[in-house]
Length: 244
Image 1 (cartoon, helix red, strand yellow):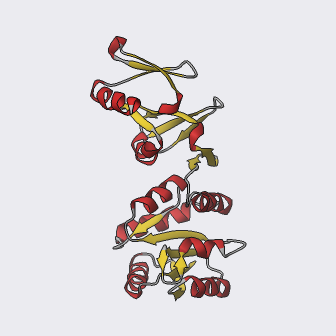
Image 2 (cartoon, one colour):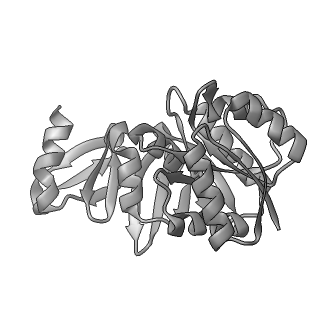
Image 3 (cartoon, rainbow, N blue to C red):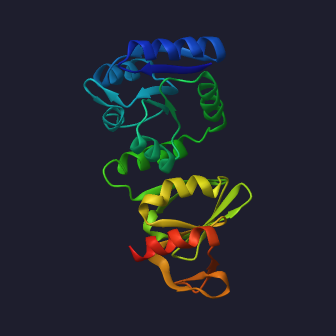
């Protein structure tokens, strides 16, 4: 059995999570519930759960405050939140799992399945550290790889290249990271950090573009000398972005 607790200031939300877990995830045991940061910390200390369903906004603080108040985190977290563009992007960038309210039972089941597959507590801690450190100023992104979690400063990413359902991340130090996520996901995550999708297969950091050449249909030359094509449909948007 997976020992869990639910920390959410909305009674209705706690009841929904409990009911869905009892109905669809009978291998998850609910040890207790709390409605705020202080009561949540107390509950965690008393029950030592393996998994915490944690609300973001609560009456006496945030779920982030709760995590920062615990010295040695020995549990996994599935965040529960009402829709917030910033929060969702923060979760995606840190590769931390989350559920949006109102909670969908299928998404809850999927989150539990992902938890079961991720047994590396160190990797979980790494992702939580990235999430907490990025609260005020996003600087790093967590890339889940076959070997674990790679933490990368966003300003050291030169470009991303698609290959089926995988994405190759090329870094300033000439390192390449292969991630089993589509380039579309990284386009969504990085677009506000001066990255632009110049082609179906290429997402580039504008800071590393050395030259734009309009010949041969148009292409960019990166600072490392690599040439990347620009699709006809994206050329105008690219030039507008490049020229400000």
